[in-house]
Length: 144
Figure 1: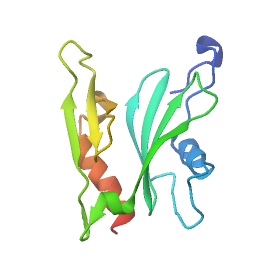
Figure 2: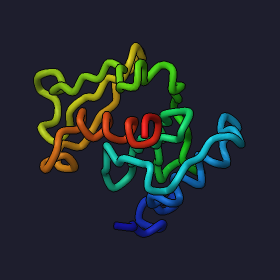
Figure 3: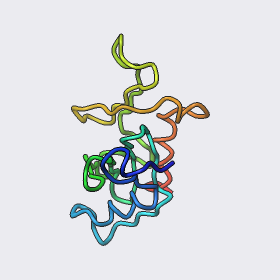
């Protein structure tokens, strides 16, 4: 769903292919990497922000798209070596509730040894666990 630029004073949120294009244009992205617009997982979605995980054959990217910013930004990346070993997804993943008194609509995702966890929208994962979908994304791009 796209929202009026005038309503929020910014731009529209990017869709999946637009997010993939923004990663390809990032200085971290290497020529040897392959990234399809299908290699993504939307984990957080509000009218002002979206958080995406995108997997290339070499990295996992976390991208924050905020209509109040000029364009989406890569928040962090993890190399394949941090995510898989011995032909298995081995990265630490933890999905948990927020601290007491926080929103019932969101939870928290921790990936690897990153010091910061990321919010996710629970409604996006009613038909399958977030942890499983992250593992499948990594496996699909880095192990198959």
